[in-house]
Length: 273
Image 1 (cartoon, one colour):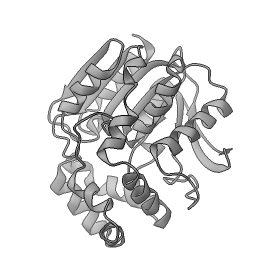
Image 2 (tube, rainbow, N blue to C red; image 1 turned 90 degrees about the vertical axis):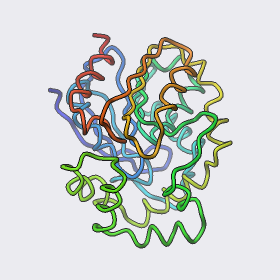
Image 3 (tube, rainbow, N blue to C red; image 1 turned 60 degrees about the vertical axis):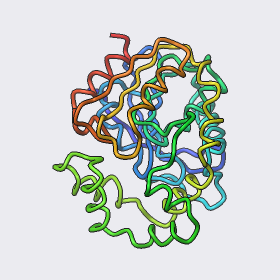
Image 4 (cartoon, rainbow, N blue to C red; image 1 turned 90 degrees about the horizontal axis):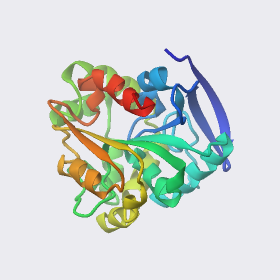
């Protein structure tokens, strides 16, 4: 397995924490995490494929400046600067949840993307209505109150009730993946990001998905409580190349936690095996 190195870089004026491993694929893989976690989500994948997994600004160990643009265009601009700093002329991209901001960059530069993996991703598509928690986050005052009332107990209870995670990992996941870096800066980033993206904005952000013509794999947990599986099929239809859609039985929002063998399956796709 590839050895993972950690470092910090300044990208477009923002301090960014990066995990990197020597690539095992034709094109290096850029892994983009979602809310509320960090690039640590991707450690099992980095060990198999190599690549780069940043903590996006506002999350994990990256800077959480009040001046950053926590929106789809803001993250797309940041990712363009990251790709330039890394000297990448070609890459594969793996996106989960709000890591889908990477699809904005991909649509701006479709020739950049070799292979694409979309996992339970925020729908940049018509017809999506935000889930209940997101609707609260999008509401001024109510969102701040919900953030301020989040504790280890309430977070664990919420994840158990949602079914987003396997029962046996909830406690450890909440402590290490969520609350370890869930400070005021991350809470502010989440609120701004969700408030920047009403459904019409999401739909417009995916208008050029058809320009992505490389091989694609769409993976979706059939028990995702936040994002219905119909959007897996919608992504498969919207992408312009050959796209395989896999609905993972008895899996939640992070389907590789329910089905660890997905890590090897996705790695095989990225290496072209």
